Length: 413
Image 1: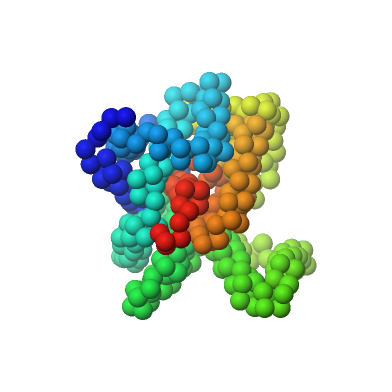
Image 2: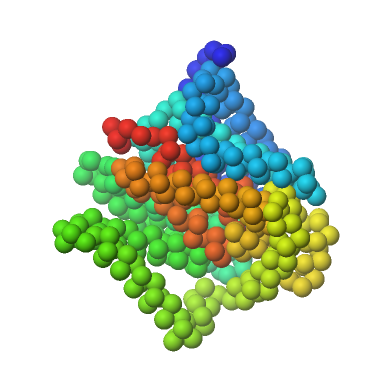
């Protein structure tokens, strides 16, 4: 153990910077129309400097409390085992340098949060930090989309704020919506509670303005399941059949949703009319077939973490001859996950989710935080964001996961 002066302050600064740069771009906004700038550019000097600095600050903090941090790491060993497996797969990646840079950024997300929560396992202080970043982000985003023409996605003409595209903006504003709900839930003062409510509506308005279908679905699931949990805890429990009625209502809702799409075939056309034509939407089935073929070449161990979607790769250049819209992801996070870290990696990922579900069931005092894990699982049916450093929703996925694992005392609420 090495005594580092102000180690707790360094951990806090690193955490604040991580959250700040997750909402606010590290590069000049409105300059790129690429969906995932971090995926295209394997070398982003600004990002490398920022995340290297974050890692260094947290590492200095780590030196003062190595034993406590290792103990906390063991508490969520399923996640660290997955990250170590992803690191191992870089050995057989065709682009080891790109794979490692991307892995290092994801690991930095994890490490910064782990170190900070070891020093400051208090939800009150976490929420104070989040409030000071999320609230200004929502206000600035509103001003930007109303005042700056370049804040509209050039491909669709919808709001993208300071993000590269409407989808990235939609995902971040969904995250902001959930945070506003958590803040609202924990505020005791009447005025502060109403302020949080206003920011909930502002965040929802920004999601709506993005016209991101994935974000719409995520928000719909969030509100639907939240309302269903409310019925379960407030009404169904009084009847004495809360779980039966909860699952019955959930099943009826899912069946109704499926039947609507079966018997109302004009729904896809209506969706296109609302969100605009997206070639990726129609070509996903073809792309998924290509990805399944790639998976079959290395089903157990994958092709290496983040080692497939590299623009310089001959495989990707060949793929672009068939897909002229130049995809940089499979538009299905689970296919990309299997393709890169194999079925072994998928099983390790499933172990993370199963462990999280078990812990979430035991720690009901942190219910709203589960949404930072649930929503990415939903988003990844049609988008690839899981463990993608360019998608900052991973910061909040890891934060939501680690909060559940490491914070146990309700007095911190």
